[in-house]
Length: 165
Image (cartoon, rainbow, N blue to C red; front, side, top):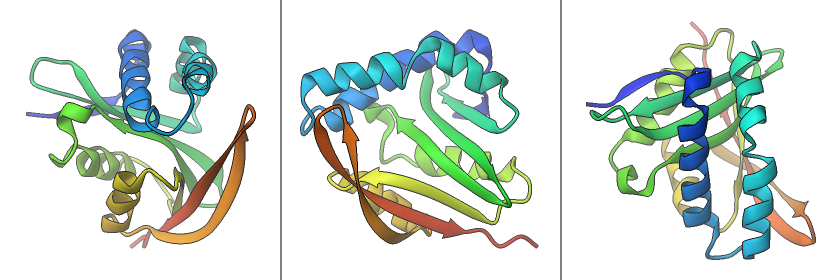
């Protein structure tokens, strides 16, 4: 059984381990090792994770398996006016394709208020994630090029309109 809950400070080290493993597994095939290490040391910094857990505009949600191990996480940031940004969503490779991503996404959205639009940027070679987001109702809008250090990375901006009743 999978349990979804908001992250607490005690989860930070295990979240970092999940992020490090999953990021390397996902992007290691097409980004240089030095870029992977740079991202892991800055974007996935322990203090940054703690700050996000405490930030009222950030929702950091985790999914645990039956052994209480964190197997997935998602970060959603309130950008104002009903716009929310999904900035991270990682599912451990051993649990991908089993509905964990759909579960954590839907549980997280269900706990947010006044959501009109959810946006996400996905690296264009991450075809598995793009297919997932399309299944979840996201639509591709534009492609952007971002720079990580000296490496150009193409990302696809995707959006999902949320119909509030």
